[in-house]
Amino acid sequence: ELKVEQNPLFLSMQEGKNYTIYCNYSTTSDRLYWYRQDPGKSLESLFVLLSNGAVKQEGRLMASLDTKARLSTLHITAAVHDLSATYFCAVDLKGGTDKLIFGTGTRLQVFP
Amino acid sequence: DGGITQSPKYLFRKEGQNVTLSCEQNLNHDAMYWYRQDPGQGLRLIYYSQIVNDFQKGDIAEGYSVSREKKESFPLTVTSAQKNPTAFYLCASSIDRSGGAFRNEQFFGPGTRLTVL
Image (cartoon, rainbow over all chains, first blue to last red; front, side, top):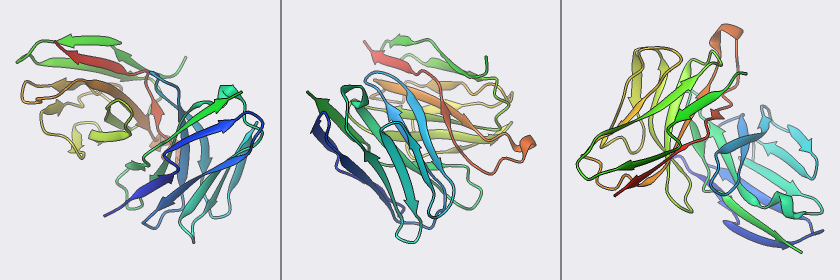
């Protein structure tokens, strides 16, 4: 059974600190996506990673993909309160199903 | 502006009543999806459609039905058979095959919050 696991599930961190969210998946895939969800809102696309070794950065967030290890990371640098949200990774299944398999989500809370 | 719209934003259903949630996109996307999200939880796939007039069950299709008569539209009906429908429903779309798309980034609508009275 295909699994996409994120850890931690909940992260409370102080402003200014660094931390990494991990996304592990159990199937072969070379395409992975990161989304952000604010409380009560929909999902917003953050990063699209389309090959092994891909690295994307936007502001204080940087995402990377290691397809051999079946691992993606979302690194937070010098966290600020505005980054408080839930972050989901999603793995693109091969084989033409067009489906994404979403991770469990990581709820990030940044406090002063 | 291109995007995905869902209506209504809030919906209240009485016991035994069927309700239909609307999802429309003008992104020329071929694939469309319906997800359910319960409080504090992740996304669960209800139904998805890769092309017009075709759709497949997701992980939790029981008590739901869909149609895909037009490329732009993918309405979801929550039937009386769905015993616990209170949740946040998200519609998404992806892939413009005419452009030779090779990635499956899904774009989400704003969601419909359904409550059973």
